[in-house]
Amino acid sequence: MAQSEAQNGAHPWEKSYPANVDWRAEIPTGALHSLLDDAAAGYADRPAIDFLDRITSYGELGALANRAAEGFQKLGVGKGRKVGLLLPNCPAAVICYFGTLKAGGTVVNFNPLYAIEEIKKQIEDSETDILVTLDLSLLYDKARVALDETRLSHLVVCSMAEMLPRLKGWLFPIVKRKEIASVPSDSRHVSLRALTDNAGNPAPIEVDPENDIAVLQYTGGTTGTSKGAMLTHANLTANAAQATMVMPDAEEGGEIMVGVLPLFHVFAMTVVMNFSIRLGAKMILLPRFELDTVLKVIDKKRPTLFPAVPTIYIAINDHPGVAAGKCDLSSIKLCLSGGAALPREVQDRFQTLSGCTLVEGYGLSETSPIATCNPTVPGGSREGSLGLPVPGTVVEITSIDDPDTVLPQGETGEICISGPQVMKGYWNRDEENAKALSGGRFHTGDVGHIDEDGYVYLIDRLKEVIIAGGYNIYPRHVEEAIYKHPSVLEVTVIGVDDARRQQTVKAFVRLKDGANLTAEELTTFLEDKLSPIEMPKQIEFRDELPKTIIGKLSKKELVAEETAKLRAAADDSD
Image (tube, rainbow, N blue to C red; front, side):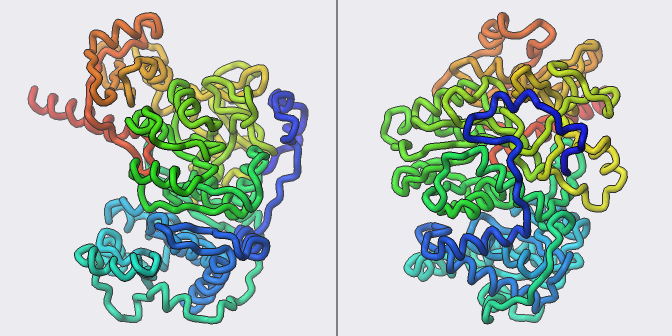
């Protein structure tokens, strides 16, 4: 979504921009697969992917994507045809992503941990015809059910063993034989090897970057029904370019990226994959997050870029080896945190332990996702802030009561975003599009404000605001206060129903290993940090807190638990 003429005046954030970043710079857009074409031409011999020690060069990756594209076209993929990816981080995920785009199709990302009913629902909603998955029972068994019970015409099944180094690939079917699925040989099943067994000459396609949908990215559904955000080729190429602009010190052809965030999530899709390919960086792809493995990879392979979510930085900070100086994090130059609020205590400790710069950004599936980011220059990061709007992006605050009214600077309201990375709309959701894109800007559903220097601050999600006794309480503010206690590792705050006050504040707290803390002690600690109305009236300590697939603390499971308790209590009273 481009800026309107009325938005082209001076903006408060421009004066806060580093000297080497221009908010008004032209944002290049084009066909998304051109990123890989350019990288394959410019960095043919440079490593593109390191997957469990198997290296794939950019030249090899480009050739494999071309062969996948020809294979997809033979299966009927063309303009607008949907190919779903039900994959963890692995070379096949990158090959089939760009192969689909080069064939003229649209990628639909699926969360491999979804239950089969969720997968089936997304297949039907998105009109996906081909699904790509692995030959591991954990994934293939779901895909096979979907093949039999949905509109799917084909499964493309990738061999895990064939993506590993030679010795590991030879041992894998022996060591993991119980985990490998039995895949039938029929016309509905196509191996990745068979898909790519061609000359790699797909029929040329014409792309309209502004209108052709590259990816249907389903929202997390944490506050309602999951919807497919239509991200165009222009949206995603623009956001990859914006990422390079806000990280001007990143060296083309010289960076090494840790890819532990899942590529099917919008954060990693752009910040790990598309950004790396645009930059010619090597991606170290890890199929899942295991703390000890990540630390060993950082120590051995010396990455320079490490985007993650706050819970990953919290886990690293709390690792005994890191605290004791036994884990070398010194190769990392820059970390970008997203997906959830980054507590200042976590940021400061990680920067002290690693010596790198850790900045917080902000975005959503609907914005491809990067909308704001703190400057990476020393002193550019503003405490508690989501940073400045990225180049070409306008952030406005509108009235919660009247969404078309833009509020004066400094006032609190709904965060709205305009820019080339804003989605075309939700797939088959005309009524919701009218509301979400009202006034020519994307309404995020987040509450915040912009300070005099143009820094954007998030207070909380509109749907997560707790209303107690007529007062609005923002869970993020309460969580930030609780994080200040040295014994607290993680915290999630929600509102629970209360007969007298409508809602009351409940905090779920996970303590650091070996720490001891009572609810009374925590309440005393918070007395000078929270008002009485904000003070948690219920505090529950847990060994683990629910998280999303990318490691973001999740509220919906806790809300569901509390709702179930209330229903059970009501049933008992009857």
